[in-house]
Length: 436
Image (cartoon, rainbow, N blue to C red):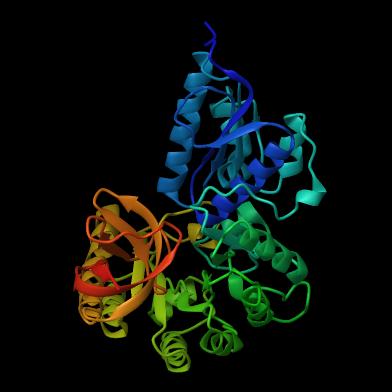
């Protein structure tokens, strides 16, 4: 029996995975809104006629979450709770034939670059004049800012090039125009994202242009913070550091996924670097941009990772004292070059190693945070939760990094505004303070 509450032309977009997917969903939603669709993001109301799931296919856990979500909505469709179900994104780019066979209740599957085809299926026009327009799903004061699509790197463990294709930079003029549009909407912080941000410009300008792009974005009125994510270590463009140091509204923050540190692991991972070069790079970054917060990501349990490799990585994390750090357990992905290797580290060992690294990082983070007590920081406030206003310093990206908590009974701040906060106490990952 069909539910009578379904609203015609109402679309619920569900996003799984990373910030790149959030960006893609926002572009899709802007196109649908322009075509007079009533669009919501991850609505809990169950009154949408159409559901579009933007999937992730990066590692095993993410794939499973995407599959579970598709199955749940396919069941809801069988019960008449929605009319049409479409799936897009990385998982359906990579496994379309298998998904069509296993979950036939989905009306159509689309890949990562199939937006015009998806819109056509919905009888919507792809509006070229809207290129760069988005319906933000983040709080209105910050936005993810994708400067390129795809990746040309050969990393052995990574399936992203299979799902996103080769690297394509967005022209600088288009990005500046997008930034101006976001600033007009009230966006104060841009999070630069890409599969590899340091590769920006090589395809269209024949040289790395990330530093110039950042300079031009920094000139956009109303943008107070620009934050750089997903920089690849091999061939890192040093002029980016000069721009960061000299430009007031570019955050002293760098997300640089290093993945491992032993030479044999880096070689097998096809990272194009060595332990010596990596250590030197981190040292140069800190030298050129004093006070910079460096975030990195590591992998535990890559094929052939010995106890010695792991101990060396753990010791390096202890010594290097990254401001922010995350770690994944290795996921054996078909069609990657590492798939030819034996996935020989048992899952429980991968898990133990990841936990051991995070334990070291917890101590590092605690020590760094204790030094911040008594200091005053500029904080951008993202939300109110319970009895606290919650914000971030220049050293922190949303969702993944530390937060600053201010007692809402004592102090009032407006969400989306900056305030100076004096830190009076600190935990492993959180700072507590008073507005000054």
